[in-house]
Length: 77
Image (cartoon, rainbow, N blue to C red; front, side):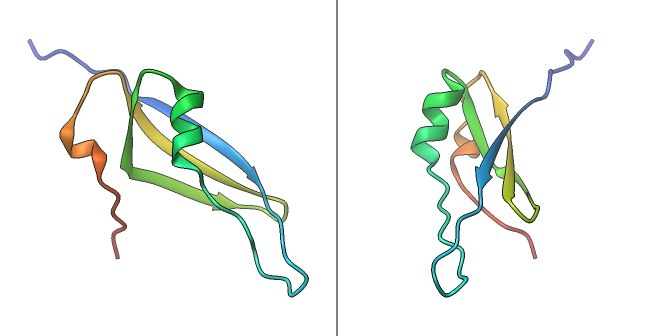
């Protein structure tokens, strides 16, 4: 029988900030997120981003096991 794996997600809420010209000056600090999550791997291919007037929400799928395929970032088109 195949073992069912539990899916886990981590969402980071980032306040939107703008410069004097109205351009967004936000960054996503992956190293800080790794510290917040702890001993799990982030699957960068599973990024979901949504935006409101005041925040950006970034969601990652995370796993407690090591997987070499989860170390790259890619966006489909």
